[in-house]
Length: 190
Ligand SMILES: Cc1cc2nc3c(=O)[nH]c(=O)nc-3n(C[C@H](O)[C@H](O)[C@H](O)COP(=O)(O)O)c2cc1C
Image (cartoon, rainbow, N blue to C red):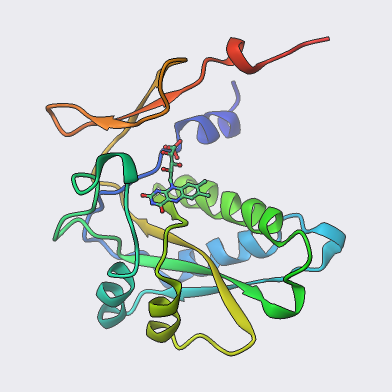
């Protein structure tokens, strides 16, 4: 295992954050990493909206749905909410293309680059898009894809190998356990 594969394997979804702010330089670098992701036919149909202003954080938070398997326990509590977001936008001109695949590649770049800075993240697909569009004053020519919640982590989730369940859970110490299928159960060779 080299350093980069270690970075990939130790990244976990984080839903409890410290109040420390992420610098604008780092947030911009995360968007830049997203920009350089692979893109079908190199169409580059995505745009990225950084949210970090204090008075926008709570309105954005209110449009997001957290940790479906353990709701409401998995929702960040007061004082542990994300300190920034990157909203991934779809340019309406490109709706027919492989836009979701492009977004997946770009978002994974954000999650991994964030983790390389010691920043935790949560990819959020369950979003009240109509409300969020109002909050961020979404321009006419874009729709909202996903939201990436960001912040320095206040928790360290752990993985456990399981073929029985995909449901993550919290133990009595509030530690998040994330089941992952064992490699041998999903890997075919020759
Ligand atoms: C497409 C997609 C949508 C997701 N949507 C949500 C969401 O709406 N809310 C949430 O709390 N987590 C969401 N997640 C995070 C997953 O719950 C998380 O990745 C999964 O539990 C595995 O944990 P890990 O990222 O630590 O490996 C989403 C992840 C993906 C890839």
